[in-house]
Length: 102
Image (cartoon, rainbow, N blue to C red):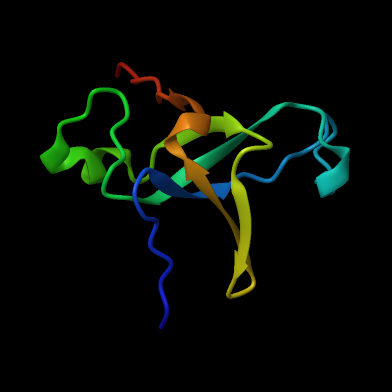
């Protein structure tokens, strides 16, 4: 099976579906926000976000949710799935999950 591997400072991101306020999926041309939210699937060898150490950056970043600019990334379709190849410069921030205190 083929696998898509990002190079250099790129991240492979699966974007979340954008929904209207009533929960209906919006088509690509109707989006209002200037950013998207997605989950990091893989990273290139030059990516360094949030001061993460080189040796464990992949383990820390893969699976994280990020906010990225809408018009910079490359939109890809492979194996009937849609992905984005996002350069590090287009990432606005990392969404940190709140820790629940039991």
